[in-house]
Length: 428
Length: 168
Image 1: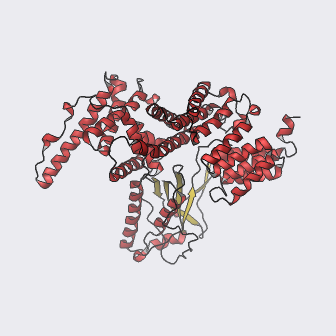
Image 2: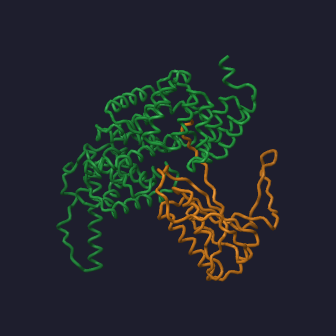
Image 3: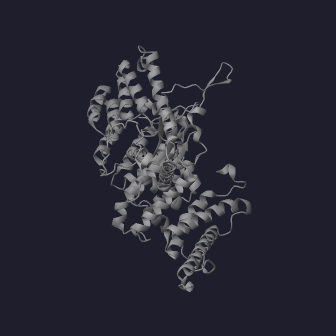
C-alpha cells in the first residue's frame, strides 16, 4: 500500500473512521447497503486526494460529507427516475441533504460494534461475511480484499453486494443487539475474526508479500472489539492468541521460504513485544473465570512462546490445556494435537494409540494432517521406514505448496539417513 | 485475468456418457465451521474428433450452447465465485514446446488422432468441494444438438494454496 502513495498519511486512521462514518450514515439514511457503497466511494476519494492535498482538518467530517453527498445524489436521481416512470411527484422536502448535516452529530463509537455484529450474520456464508466485514468494518477497498483472496475485483464486489442483500432481506435493525443476543452471536463474530487472521497468517509466506496483511487487519479489528467489549474474556483470549501466534511470524520461514516447524525455529526472531502484550491480555482474561476456546488456544501458544528452547517446552502443561480444550470444544483437530502433546509427555507409542480412532473419523480420515502427525510420531519411535511412507502420504494429500515441500523434505531427510535418527545424534 | 466466455465448442452426439460415480444430495447436514474458500479448476477435455462433429451443429444449436455458457458464467460472477475462464483455440493450432540444450524453444505440432484436448477451463472460488462438483455438473449439461444435454466429462482439480497453517 505504502509504495503507491506519494505522501504518507495514516491509512489506519482512515480505516478506523470508515465504520464510524458508516454507522452515522445508516442511522441518517436508514439504508445500510447504499450507505456502505457511499462510504466505499468516500474512502476511495480520500485515498486519491489526501496523499496529494493533505489530510483534512476534520477527516471524519470530510468522509461523512462526501459519503452523504453521494447518497443524496443517489436519492435525488432515484426520485427523478420515479417521477419519470410514474409521474408521481415525490416529496423531496423530506429527504435530508448533505449540506444540512452537521458532520459529527451522529457519531457513536458503538457503531463499529453494531456493524461487526451485523456483518457476522449467521445466515451469510463465511466467505461473504469475511468480505463484508473487511469492507464495512475494516474500511478496506474491494480491490484490496479481492487481491488478498486472489479473485477478480468484480467477483469480490458481487460477494459483498450479495451479503448486503441477505442482511437487508433478514430485516436486521441497525442497533446494538440486546445483551443476550449479543452473547449468542459473539462466537460467530470471533470465528470470522479468527478466519481473517488465519487466512492472513497462512498466506504470509513467500511470494505474496504484496498482498494485504490480513493478519494485521484481523489484529486491528479484534483490538477494536476488545475495546468495545472490555469485559469479555474470549475477545481478549482471541486477541492474545493472534498476538502470540503472529509473534513467531518471522521465524516460521527460512531463507528459501521453506516452512520451519516450531521446534526448529530461531526463537530470537520471535517478536517479544507481541508475546508480552499477548501474555498480559491472556492473564487478565483468565482471571475473569470463564475459560473458553480462544483463551485455551492462547494459553497453549503462550506456553510455547515462553520456552527459550524447544526442549524447554512445558509439555505436561500443554497436555493439560489440550485436555481442557477437548472438553470445552472437542474436534478431531484438537484430538490430533492432544495426541502430539501426549506423545511428548508419555512417549510416541501413547500418541500413536490416540491417533487410531481418528482413522475412522470421516472429518479427518484421509486428511494430510493425520498422516503428518503419524509420520512425526513414527519418526520419534525410530520407525523411519513407516515414517517416510506417512510423510509421503501426507505430502500427496496436502493442498498447500509450502506444506508439501516441507513434508517431502522430511521424507527425503529420513530416507537419506535411515539408520541415523536425529534424536540419537543430538542426545547421546 | 480473462472474463471472456466459456468455450462453446463441444462434441457432437455419440460420446458415451460415463455414469456418475457420486451424486450429492441436496439436503446438507449442518455445516462444519467453514474455513473460507478453495479454488478449483474445471477442465473440459474433448477428443479431436469432437471438434469435427461440432462443425456439423446447426447455427441454432451453437447459439444455444454459447448462450448457456455465457449464462453460467454470469451466474458464477453474480454469486461471487468466478475467478477466470477461457475457451481455447482449436487443437490443429496447438504446439508442444520443449527447450533444446540452449534453452531455445523447439515446437512440435503432431498429435495422435486419439488424443484428447483441453477445450476450455473455468476457475472458481468456492466454499465446498460439493459446490465445485455442482458447477461442473451444470457445465457438463451444456446443450448440444437438438438442445439435448451433452453431459461432457469435466475434470475437477483443486488448486494448491501458497499458504500454510502452523505445523504441529
